[in-house]
Image 1 (spheres, helix red, strand yellow):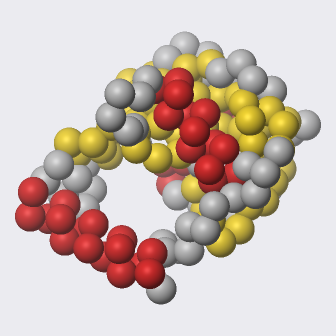
Image 2: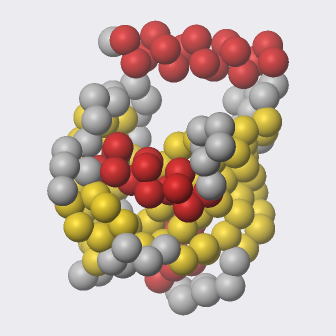
Image 3: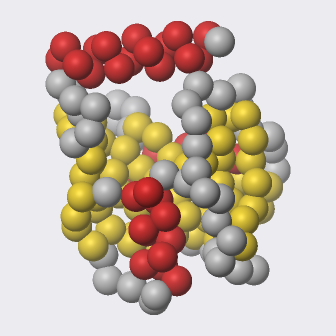
Length: 150
């Protein structure tokens, strides 16, 4: 409940101030499966990720968010692209990384309701549309960084 109230406050903040935010997402894929998270405060499945902290590089943010949200330590990261989202009064810009080299050493933090691996050809119906498109591009072998809207 706490995270839901916090999320509602964040949406009100976005409506009033229209912030420009920078974030990261990580496609954690091994053995034909992608690891997705379901948060406690918003419905649907997501790729792990979140916002940058002050003084943090994009790679550091991707590694931190993956560890916080999945308990995984990431190996080599590859940049897939940069994407923008202007819904809900936001100006969000996310860099998407792929990682096929990771190991779980911990547990997700308290904002994660569920962590689960899905076969790339059996993704959940309530996966965010932009995240679904990125996974389809990955399956199609798109390797050069893309720059577009989610």
